[in-house]
Length: 175
View 1 (cartoon, helix red, strand yellow):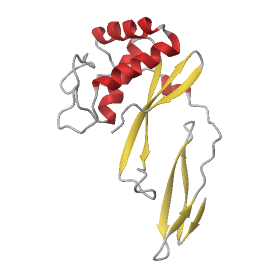
View 2 (cartoon, helix red, strand yellow; view 1 turned 180 degrees about the vertical axis):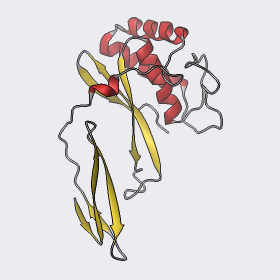
View 3 (cartoon, helix red, strand yellow; view 1 turned 120 degrees about the vertical axis):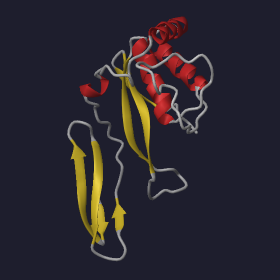
View 4 (cartoon, helix red, strand yellow; view 1 turned 90 degrees about the vertical axis):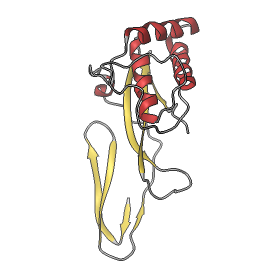
């Protein structure tokens, strides 16, 4: 990383390979140059640890439905993809005032299309995959849209799964 016009550096989160940059301007114009590498990093085991909360606990009818979806597709990674497709079909992307799981002690099964943000969609996806017996983790990060290229105003989230030893990233919350 190369910084001109500011003091700064990187702050790393232990065991996650996530970094944030801090800057203290020393000139009217600041330039930051960095390079992204294609070197893969192992995700920590903690990403796949299941925490029981109202944001991750699947209603029993979700678990039953998703096990059927995965099984009908053939199970394994093909079943996981079938769950992703099923969840993606349930959610047109959008931001609403009330989330589908507000007021519930578990993630309720959806029976019809429901508008949802990346948070909503991936909350449901985590419950669906875990309910069907797959390992999954919720990941958040910075979202830099192509039209902005230089900065972000928002965060984004996606899901990591591990099936038969293969880790896969899923970003099914597409606007």
